[in-house]
Image (cartoon, rainbow, N blue to C red; front, side):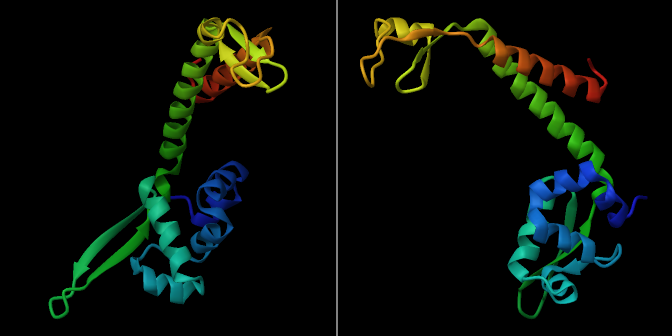
Length: 173
C-alpha cells in the first residue's frame, strides 16, 4: 500500500488533491495519523488544524470515496460520533473516473462545436448559433451591430486534441 507521503510526492496526484481540498486539506492529509480511525475533533487536535478545515477536507474526500467513516451513537447522550479513516488507495480509480467524465463532457462540447455554425458580434464579443443569428436577422440583439461569421476551427482542433490526449492516457484512444 502506498503511503500518504508517497502519494503527495507524486506531482500529478498532489496537484489533483490540492485542487480538490486546497493547501489546508493537503496539510490534514500530511498530518493524518496512521491507518487508525479518528473523530474529526481528534484529528483537529492531533493535527493542530482548525476543526472546520478538517471537516471540510474529510467531507470533500468522502464525496470522492477517498475517506470513509463509521458512525457511533453514545447511548447516554444520543450524540453521534463519526470515526474517519482515509481510503487513498482508491486515488487512481477516482482520477480515472474524473478523466472519463471530463472526456465525456469535452466530447459533447466538441460535437456541439462541430455541428453548429456560429456568428459573433464584434462590439459585444458575444457568439450566437446560426439559428439564433438568423432569428435576429444577423443583427446583435444587444447593440444592433451586424453579426459576422465566427470561425471556431481553432477551438474544434484544441478540443479534438484534448479529447485524444485524455483517451490516450486512459488507454482507449
